[in-house]
Length: 334
Image (cartoon, rainbow, N blue to C red; front, side):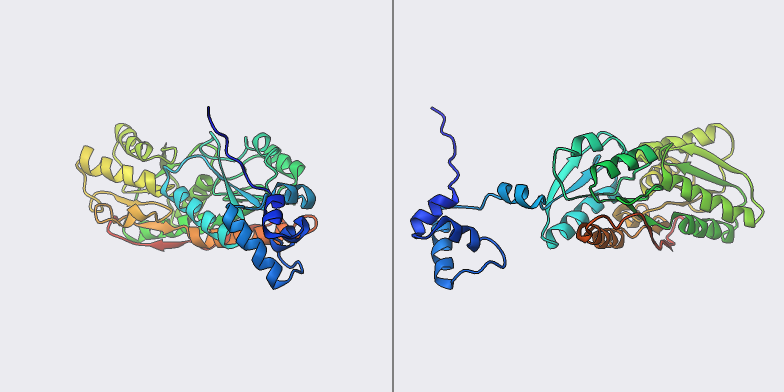
C-alpha cells in the first residue's frame, strides 16, 4: 500500500515543545514578541519533526503570496537565459520566491494574463515585452505590477525597462560609415518586435545623415538559423551589401557562419558585420563579433528597483519607460 507523506502541523510542534500553538506562530513570524527560551523550545521541536511553516494561511490573511512570476518562452536566446538567471538571483536576494512561468509565445507576454490570474503572484518580471494596448489593459485589470524589457506600451501597472536600441544602432551605422561602407543591410528580428523596429530606426536615421537612404532587409526572427538563411537570401537577390547589421547577436553569429563557410567570404575584408546584445558567444575567438552591449544586469537591477517601488505603493507606481544606455564594442568583424 502506497504511503502518503504526513506534513507536521504547528499543533504537533506545540505539543512536542510544551507550548501553545500561538507561541509556535509567533516564533516563525518576524517582529513578534516571544521569549528566547520559548523560541528555543519551538525550533528544537520543529527541527526534530522536520516541520516547516505553512504559508498558505498567511497568504489568505495578508493577500500577499511572496511569489514573483518570472516569465520565459525558452532559453535558446542567450540574452534571455542570462536575464532569467539574473532575475532569479535578484528576487531571492530580495526575499521573494520565484515562480517560473513558461508561455508559448517566442516574443511577447500578450497571451499571459489568463494563466496568471489564478496564481496570486505579487509581481511579474520578464525579458519578454508587452506589445499591445489590449494586453497592457489586461494586466491593469488584474492589478499585478508588471515589469518587462523593451516594451513600447506602459500604464499604471505595466513598466518597461529598455536598452537604448536607437542610440546603439546609430553607433553601429556611424562605425560602418567610418570603415568605408557604401551599401548596407539589416537582418530584422520578429515582425512585431519593438526592439527590432527601434534598432532599424536608429540605423536608418544615422545613415540618412550621411546621405545613405537604401537599406536591404531580410527577416531572421532572432534565430541563429534565421541569420544564416537571411544571408543566403540576400545573396540570391544580388551582391551583398558592404555592411550588415543584425538585430541581435544570435542572428549575427548565423550570418557570420553563412558568409564564411557557405559563401566563402571574408569578414571584415569583404563584408562588415555587427550585432546587438553582447551575449557571451559574441566574444568567442571563432566569432569575435562587433556588437552593442545591452546591459542585461543593469536592466534587471533597474527592474528590481521599479518592482520594489510598485509593490510598496498602495496603488501603483508604474507607467514609466526606463532607458538603459547601450554601448558599442568593436571587435574583429568590423
